[in-house]
Amino acid sequence: MPVFDAFGIVVSDLAASLSFYRLLGIDLPESGEGHVEAELPGGIRMMFDTIDVIESFSEWTPPSGSRGIGLAFLCDGPADVDATHARIVAAGHRSKLDPFDAFWGQRYATVLDPDGNPVDLFAPLG
Image (cartoon, rainbow, N blue to C red):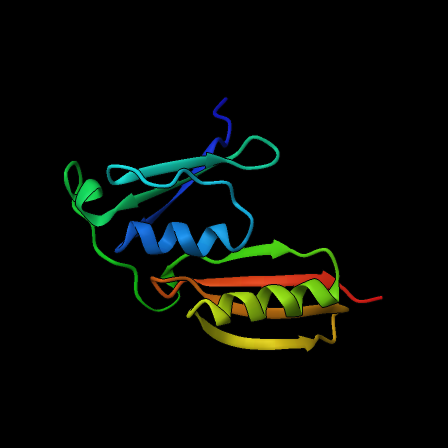
């Protein structure tokens, strides 16, 4: 039976994407030749490939609308949601949703990675 091992993100600017995801605490190599990956807690690999790399072996069409990815990062607490959001925005990345206390019991915010993919930041309230 297959075992889930990795997920990949196709990126337009590898250096910008690596810089963004480092702000979220992912330990990534400084550079790569169009492909970089990191092992996440739990053993799942997160892979980044440039459009050129993907197009070298497969036809690729950029996602549009809601067909892209969505990632969520659990923060250490509500204050960490605010601090992480502020650090990412201060580094020049876009906020889609400023931090707020959600009715479902979480401090919640959304930032956009360099390719416009939503990245949620959250922590339980209280």
